[in-house]
Image 1: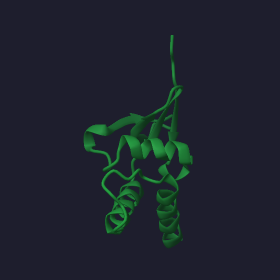
Image 2: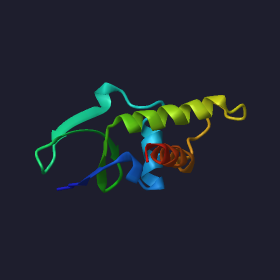
Image 3: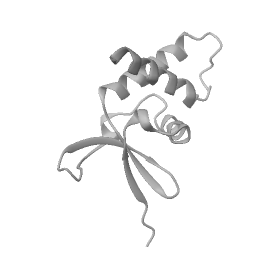
Image 4: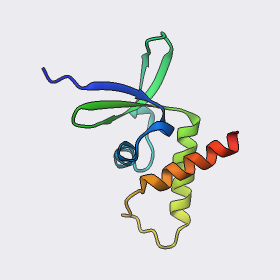
Length: 106
């Protein structure tokens, strides 16, 4: 039996490697059909999108912060004259956008 670990994780807590996989899987953001809904151990309803690696399924919690971070990053990418349509999303740059938003929330 090939059972993968499942880990529920907040978008802001993703490692750069998993963040990069997230952006590869959802380059223009995710759609409602990508969202799964389930109950966690505390019987709370959680909405998430999957990022799958060889041995783990990461369930990245969906939130308005996630949506805003992706939108802000894509806006930055669109405003950069040197960025072509096939440019690979840089996970560190997206992480910077998220951290900047966290500073604003404080």
